[in-house]
Length: 87
Image (cartoon, rainbow, N blue to C red; front, side, top):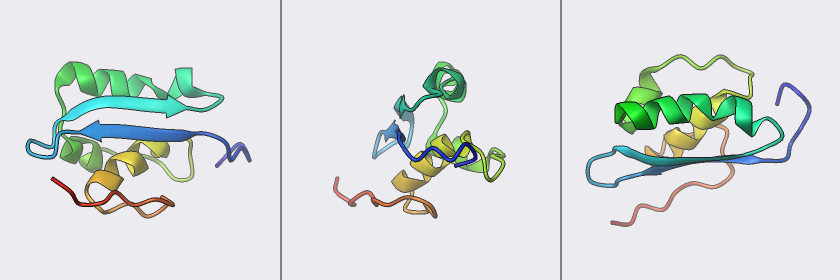
């Protein structure tokens, strides 16, 4: 991370059938600054592809939400845990 902080995580809850984002969790020292994109997305009814197609600079803390969304598409590059494909 850009702040040399390695504690925290981001999680994006996605409907398996519609790929609509249902919820966002961010646990970190700066969670209150990072949650804005998730709130906006929930209010707009975004799908995980919408997050994928938006620009997230690297390396920044804001790309944590992007990486969490990419887990649901099995496209995450920087995640330690991959989502299992169960429906």
